[in-house]
Image (cartoon, rainbow, N blue to C red; front, side, top):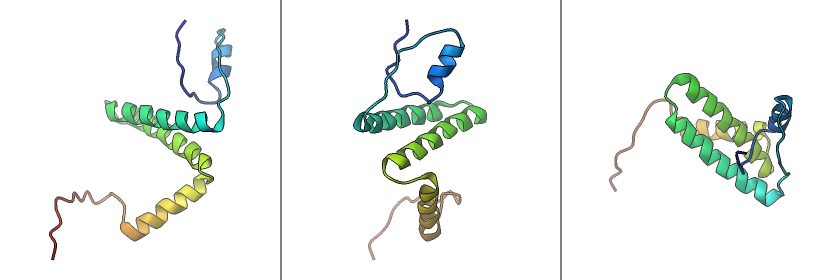
Length: 108
């Protein structure tokens, strides 16, 4: 029997049951949930960095986005508020679309 001990998407126990299998799962308390979300984000980031094609990369980015929404909720915000903050920072400081790579800054 495989042991996973990790945070999974909400419908995974249902999907397992629909495949004729049983699983053991539990609901995490707030502190454990927050820690598990952070660990899962690290796992998904690693999977994104290891993706070998664009389709796989997009799948991993979708997982990361789902985790960012969940983490926003943990911090008392929703996805719209996260997007508002992102847009404000982008308007103020720019995005990452122009491929600027800062090498050094000299003091005047």
